[in-house]
Image (cartoon, rainbow, N blue to C red; front, side, top):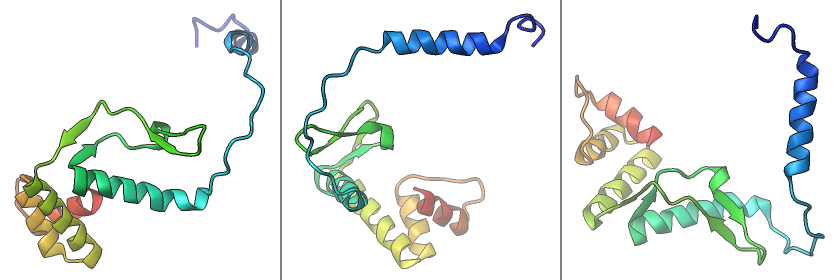
Length: 136
């Protein structure tokens, strides 16, 4: 604060905004895009993630809204595949059992699945493993 005390902060903000606004290229005229049912997106994303995890055997460890794009033809595009892990069929089965255990509220089975996936804690308590399964 002392080093910037003599600068009028509002002029810095305006200058930065003016620079940002001038550096953005002009957008092309809008074209008609396909309509998208936003309420169907969660189901679609869960189905895609389920397909990738359990059928293809890939885990994208960075799935967040910034890595989802709507393509011009109405399809959904998933980007940024820099953090991907391939799962063996055995790992997929353990993961599927963990998902089922969490859905059923079976903390003992969830804990066993987490151990099967290689997780270890200092005190080796089922409760700790089951909580991790719920966050996993």
